[in-house]
Image: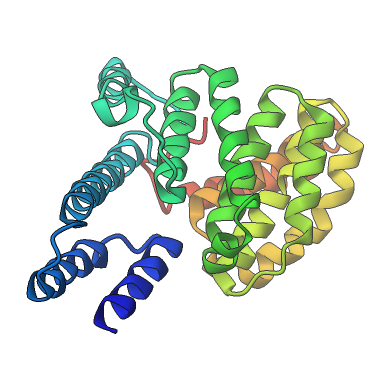
Length: 278
């Protein structure tokens, strides 16, 4: 009965990718089997424990690399110096990343896809970045339980895919991604402002295509949202949105309104004088 309970606990841990308890469960299996005088499955359990410990070590390293790349690029999604570029290249040469050893773990794949897509985006290799951003979104959509557990991760993955589609001038793909964002029902204030921030990318899309009138028509909706919830939205995200407002107005020949939005943007920048709007 003890072995049955341990096997059930281990199966559930594998199912939900809760790796930390697995070595403990295996060691308890050692104890029970030892008391029963049954050593026939010991070699398999030893191999299994080593495999799980290797996976835990890889995931821990992946988390470190995610933190490292975020510190390098911060909110800019691109390198701004040779030192940053060298740091990205060093990160890409890390054995955990360079081996492309994704395994069968959802978390392992999601970390690797995030690291590669972010690194290639930062160094200007947009087509490579696009490949891994697509993989990350597909991975999430193939695992709806993971989306339900962490909806913000899915919103961010879609948002980053959309911005790259806009940069690569993939109009229909970007509109399809924006539509996916529109179908999501936020479960928290953070998710709501994330969603609206990325959905405002539709204005950026129309600006990039020179369809300024379409962008102009969307401004009232998003300005109403900014006025209502602006205090909860990070300044750097507000800056991007206001810049897109001004760009639409300027492109449509509404110069007075363009200056109005630029003035609001510069007022926000004063709160963060180190932020580079370019």
